[in-house]
Length: 231
Image 1 (cartoon, one colour):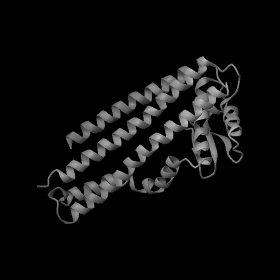
Image 2 (cartoon, one colour; image 1 turned 135 degrees about the vertical axis):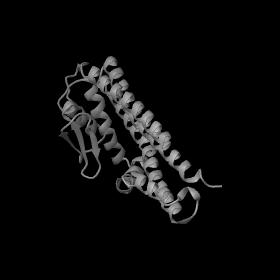
Image 3 (tube, rainbow, N blue to C red; image 1 turned 90 degrees about the horizontal axis):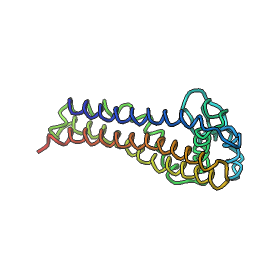
Image 4 (cartoon, rainbow, N blue to C red; image 1 turned 90 degrees about the vertical axis):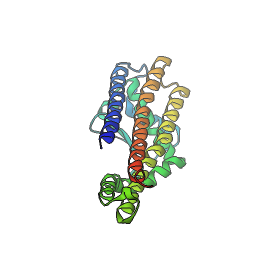
């Protein structure tokens, strides 16, 4: 168990460092005011219109960095610090979330795959660890009996969460690429503002990368615990 705690501690530390860097970046670029004077909501609405998307609403949602696109009700949800703000950070976030709406409208395959995994992972991810624990307690490391198959079931659940984390990567990177391309091609931001938006989205993407690596490392660790005791 000590190895697991060290692993989790290392992952948590890296995740905290990246998250802290992301917050500091957004705080910095929130001070880079847009020359066009557009708010995050206005930028989102313009990007939707430019892509011919008429059935998606832009709404405000409470919290910080709680921005997301909801494919079920077709809403681009912008946090309070983005919806009304007129800076490079707000431009980056709002355009990124609309990037997901564009993916949805164009049936982007990775987004479709992630959407299919959501209901499964939302149920299995919270119980996978306990299922693996239960299997190990029942003697899974010996490679025989009920405990072994219980642990295998837990690893499969954990594997689905890991798959979800890696499927999320192309979805997030593609949304950022779509956002940055639109911001640049439509001259929505100046070159300086563009660099700020690009840097902010780069750090946002790294949070997903760290999460995916952490999920894979956890899966490998517990896989070794289950299979490592076998002859």
